[in-house]
Amino acid sequence: MPSVSSSTATILLHCPARAQTCGPLPGLLMCLLSSARAGLWRRFLGGGAYELRYQVAIVAPEEVVEASTIAFRELRLLRERLREGALRTDAAVAEARRRWKEAFGKLRTRIRADLGASGR
Image 1 (cartoon, helix red, strand yellow):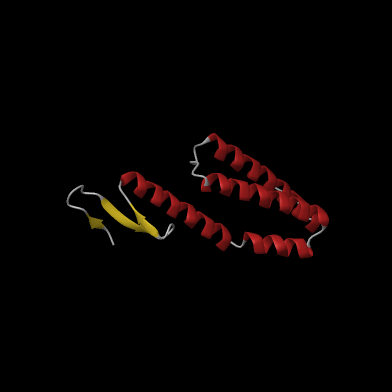
Image 2 (cartoon, rainbow, N blue to C red):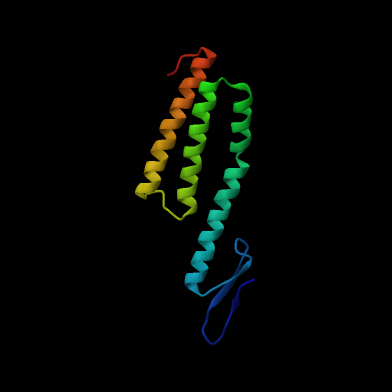
């Protein structure tokens, strides 16, 4: 619950990501960034990436598993750049996104080849 100190007019907010009270403004901004990073982590784990990776490893041929592992690692690196606080417009994020898209494209190609399907 926010509270206001009459002497400094500092707004303090409880930060669930850090399980502490944050304030004044620089601390509050860091708290909000930490909350965003925590949310990103929860979405990454909740998206089922690990589970899908293991399912592929169990049923797919080695070429698909190899491409899947590479794509997963690139996705994880992209997530790490964002967790570190990089913005979508940062060069590091753009490069990580490019590498993930390339790896995911190779994974799609190998899956389609394994299924005997043609790509677009």
